[in-house]
Length: 139
Image (cartoon, rainbow, N blue to C red):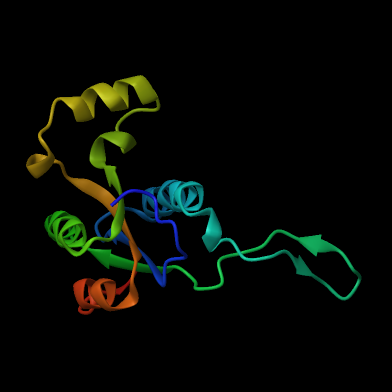
């Protein structure tokens, strides 16, 4: 699925349950940034406090952050693709370098079916996403 033209009903990020806290936070942040770029309609209107100070809008539908083992992340990605969700995946190679060109080259050496992920996001209709992630717990 390419970038959605209508506002998605659900946004879920699933992170590798074996990652240390810092790497898990990094994976969620990297994925969330791309979610916002691909789905700008997910950002709500600005928030205005009682003093009249405006704060940037946040995501009104929320983002559930779940955990799964690395093998399950690959399965979730496949199920998401099969259900028409927009998928944002973060291959493990991304946390092995700080050089984006090296990251691109590393991913280019692995066929899709063999890629492993530190995180995957599913964005789209509520029902198919809920079915895919139903048995997962919070990160």
